Image (tube, rainbow, N blue to C red; front, top):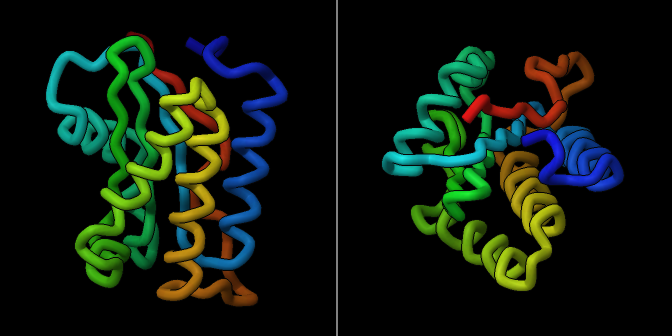
Amino acid sequence: MKTFFTEDQKNKIIEAIQTAERNTSGEIRVHIDKTCNEDVLDRAAWWFKQLKMEKTAQRNGVLIYLAVQSKKFAIIGDAGINAIVPKDFWETTKNGMLEHFKKQQFAEGVIYGILEAGEKLKVAFPYKSDDVNELSDDISFGTK
């Protein structure tokens, strides 16, 4: 599963997370699974909990979840971010990502989603001088 993205693409995704998080106290993670045999939002929510993303101080974590062989993906945010983004925000962001995915530009699609989430996060949860990176910026990979 770790070979879905090249090393260069992985580095660019991590750089996008770091860029987005420079302007916000929010936290963004990317998780990659091989398959998803259930509702994609349920699976993303399960990984959100496994990655302890609900433990951020302001409940402002965002997870971009991809199941590559199943061709499914989801974006979910914690309670703090969901309370302030427009109702169609995650769907609009997903549609932008999908445009890249249709062109086989998977890394670019993920980066687009990260940067879009970062823009919303910085408005609602601006960076503060005492901000700490509460969650890893690394991409996580499932076992299935």
